[in-house]
Every structure is written in C-alpha cells, then in structure tokens.
Amino acid sequence: MQKQQTIIEESLKALMEDDTFLPDLQAQTREQAFKSLVALLSTPNHIHKSFLRITLENGRIVRIPSFRIQHSDTVGPYKGGIRFHESVNEEEVANLAKLMTLKNALHELPFGGGKGGVVINPKEYSVKELNLICKQYVQYFNDILGPDKDIPAPDVGTGEREMDWMMGEYKSTHPGKPYRNSFTGKSILNGGSLGRREATGKGVYYTFRYMMHNFVQENKKWLRDSENRFAHTALDHADKKLKMAVQGFGNLGSVAALEAFQCNYLQNKIVAVSDHNVMLYNDDGLDIQGLVKFTKDNDGDLPTDKSQLEEHEIKAEIKERDDLLELDVDVLLLAALEDQIHEDNMEDIKARIIIEGANGPITEGADKYLADKGVLIVPDILANAGGVIVSYYEWVQGREAQFMTEDEVYKRLFDKMKTTMDTILPQFFGDPFPLRQNSYIHSVKKLSTIMYRQGKLY
Ligand code: NAD
Image 1 (cartoon, rainbow, N blue to C red):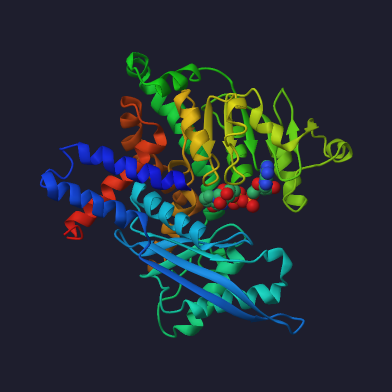
Image 2 (cartoon, rainbow, N blue to C red):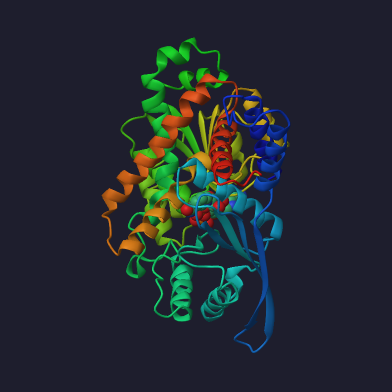
C-alpha cells in the first residue's frame, strides 16, 4: 500500500510540472499549493477508533478493536466498506479509505472515501455474537454515520446479512429519519440493488473486454504507430485466442470468470482457476459454468479430489495452488488477496496482461518491474469499481424509493465504466505512464481542482 502514496506523490509532481493545470497558481504559490495537496491527500480527515464491548454467549466479556476512517469528503459523503478480519489494523484501514477516495473520484461518483474494520475472524463467532458486533459498531459510530455523512458497505468478511443488521440498528437509533440509504450492499428485501452482488466481477471483466475488443480494435492504426510499449502488448493480443488463468473463485473471481467464459466478443479459453485449496487446470479450457454450479453447492469451494471431479463430470487436473501465477498464459486475472505477485515471484510471471480484481494484488516493486517489461496491468482502481458504482445506484434508489431492473443496473454500470475508460485509455496509450499512474493522475487532478475551487488550498 506504500505504492499508493508513491503514486499520489508522483501524480502531483507530474501535474505541478504541467502549466496548463491550475494555471492561476504560479511560482511559489504553486509549489506551496502542491505541497498542501500531498498533505491533504495523504492523510485522513478523521480516524475513529473504538473497543466494542461484547458479551459472548459463554458469558465472557471481550473488547474488540474497531475503526471507521474517513479519508476525504471533498466530493461527497464518505463511502467505503467495513472489513471483518483478524489482520485489520489502523494503517490498512486508512490506506483502503484513501483508495476509496481516489476510486470514487476516478469514476465520477459523488462520494468521498472511507473504510471500516473490526479485528475479528468472523468464523470464530456465533451468529448471535456477530449480530451484537454489528449493532455495537453502529452504536459506537452512531454520530458519524448516515446517508449524507458516511455510507458503509460490505467488504472482506461482511455481506448483505451484516449490512441488513447495521441498517436495522441505524433505523432504531435514528427514529423518523431516512435510513434506507444509510448502508449499501443490503439484501434486496431490505432495499438492496439488483445486480449488486455480481457488479464487481462483471465490471472487472467488462473493463478488460472494453479495452481489448472496443478500444484496441477501433484504434489499431493509431496504436500501431504509437511508441507506447503497452500499446504493442495490447495489439499482440488483439486477434488471438486468449489463454487465461483466474486466481480466486469467490464472489468476484467466479463472476468474472463466467463473464469471460460466456463472452462473444473475445475468444477466451480459461485454462486454470484456483481457490484457497487447489488449482484446477485443463489445457483445452475449463467448464466454468460447471465449476460455478459446483461451488454454489459446496460452500464456495472448488473440487479438491479426483472423485469429486469425476462425479460432477468436470475435466481438469488438480495442481499446486500457487503455481497458477506462473503459468504460460496470456492473461492473469487476480481475484483473491493482496500482495500475490511480489519480488520473489515477479520474474516467473509469463502473462503479458494482468487484471487486478482484488485490491493491491501486486506489490510496489513487482508492479514497477512488470510495467518496465511492458506487461499491461489493468489496475484495481480502474477495474474493480463495479461494486461501489452499483452501491451508488443502491443509494440513489434508497433515496427515491424507486427501484431499477437488473438490466437497467448493468446497463448503467457498463455505461459508467465506459465513460471512465474513454477518458483514460486515449491518455494511457498516448503517454509513457502505466495505466495505474494514468488513473491516479486523473483522480488526483479532479480532487485537486475541486479542492482549489472550494478554496481549500489557501
Ligand atoms: P471472496 O471471499 O468471495 O473470494 C476470495 C476467493 O479467493 C475464494 O475463492 C478463496 O478461496 C480464494 N483464495 C483465498 N486465498 C487464496 C490463495 N492464496 N490462492 C488462490 N485463491 C485464494 O472474496 P471476493 O468478494 O471475491 O473478493 C476477492 C478480492 O477482491 C478481495 O481482495 C476483495 O477485497 C476484492 N474486492 C472485492 C469486491 C467485491 O465487491 N466482491 C470489490 C472490490 C474488491
């Protein structure tokens, strides 16, 4: 996550040197303003911390560290998920809050950035205890949350059940006040949006498909003449059958893999998928539909032995989980965890295109190494915003008490992602920066301009 800070600073440096950007700021004032921007974008507005006091079912009282970090409300109310994980810590939550500010700005959502965290392994708590934790979280942070202040959503370890509970508690503690859009990622029955669950996976694949099918096909001549190294990587893959490997087969990975499997625009062949247990491999292509069905019936897990594969007529070899990253494929889709490609395995990566579904799956050093080699990395900030985009639609629907059909939600989701891509891709293929840096420059530019216009740089 140090990577984020470095890119913010590099983006501001590039913008400072561009005298068409904020031209009214000259000489010393300009330097001061950009120093201020580094400080403003690097640190959160508020860090809220509490120890939730929970009486467990066995009668023992525990104190659970929990956070809500509000990074920036420059563009609108704070928005970002709540993570339940034992490794949650203040620095991680603050970094994720910062990423939300930048992601929301990039995709033109009327939100700032925030993030929450509770230091627990949710699997170690009963349903009743988890319900208590969710209620207490809302009680402890009661004054800072709300539809126009800070709107949480699910993240790792939380889902629609937790959002329903939290919204329920918010409603009880704010009688007579609007509550439906206080949380997003809720169940449909409680005002959630159709398509929210599939939105991130669909958006991740759409980003890739739009770049390779629409943009690259329509701009072949220009890209061929360009000196940009990533343009050549894209062109090399434009008309061929793409061998793909997908790391992580949960909510995001399975939806994105199914989109790739069913795509009529590109010729994809998914030869490998993995989860926390295994890698499944088939050089002729895996039956992703069959695997999605299997995981639905098996608590989210892929088959782990030959008998399960035979019983469900799935043709695949079982291989070492972590070898997936080093397979000889064209495209790697990372949909599991952070820091998966790092200094120790970066030299063994063979894929020329990497899509970041997960947040931060490539470390700073590996990111630079791969970009220098011309590997086209579609970064998290650009690719995995589908969830927060549909959260925005959920928030709007909650405000208006009018609900969209699933098709409307997907249409709006893809339109929004297309708008972002149409802004970013021509710049990206036209200048030397990697796609991540380009996306950050765009976000930082927008945030800086708004702060300047709001008079925050004096
Ligand atoms: P999930 O828990 O549903 O799925 C995670 C998957 O990764 C599971 O299949 C798990 O078995 C697998 N996995 C865990 N460790 C692995 C390993 N070492 N190797 C291979 N597979 C492994 O989570 P998700 O919602 O699909 O999210 C995946 C990632 O994407 C997370 O990092 C999350 O923060 C990020 N993300 C998710 C969303 C969303 O809306 N779901 C939005 C933005 C970012």
